[in-house]
Image 1 (cartoon, rainbow, N blue to C red):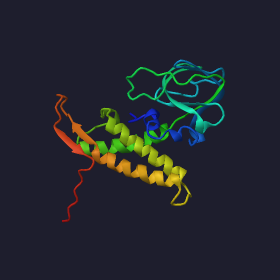
Image 2: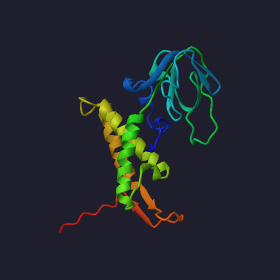
Image 3: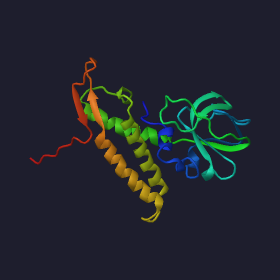
Image 4: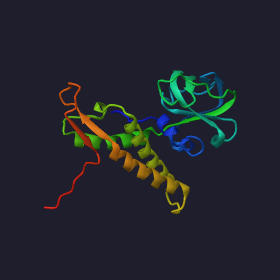
Amino acid sequence: MSDYCQDRDILAIEPVIFLGGGFPAQQLIAGQTGAFAGTTFSISGGSFTSASVQPGMVLVTYSTIPAEGNACEVISVNSSTQLTVSVLRADTEDAAVAPPGGSDLLFHVRTYAAQIRAVSRTLGEKLRQISEVSPVANADFADSDQLRRATAYGVLTEVFTARAANAEAYDANWLKAQHYRQLFRQAQLQLRLAVDADGDGQAERTRSLGNVELRRS
């Protein structure tokens, strides 16, 4: 199935969850021997390929404290020990921008792929139900900024809700969970589904996830 956003899209909204506040259980690889050469990041131990690091994920590098480190997007996995990375770009078509240089850097790659997949499935099912065309799969939906943003908000809702478990109502994680839950709801209402059933390039129907009418009989 298709995932509607990547870790880099979440980084653009909430970098803190990749720095010091990530889930250790979702850490793919970490080490102490990273070095930059322009947009190339190399390590002398470990394997990016064995760790299943993928383009669109986020690399964090730091000297001592993760929360004070630098986060950049992974553009490509060149080999088991080398990545091409960039400072977060406004558009994935933009040229890569070299992060600050350094050697003997601590690093980690954490991913929210599990949450991205779960939210993508939820949105995909909602879109499929209102499409009135069967069969429709998640991969049939075209990529869009609105869909990426809605998915990212849904992921952040799940992340901060998990972080706020057993917390007081005024806890910052709980407040952020409520904030992103509201944004997720609003983003869904802004989604529009254009159905081109016969493939002629013209949409026969346009529907919204907000088009719900309740009638009492």
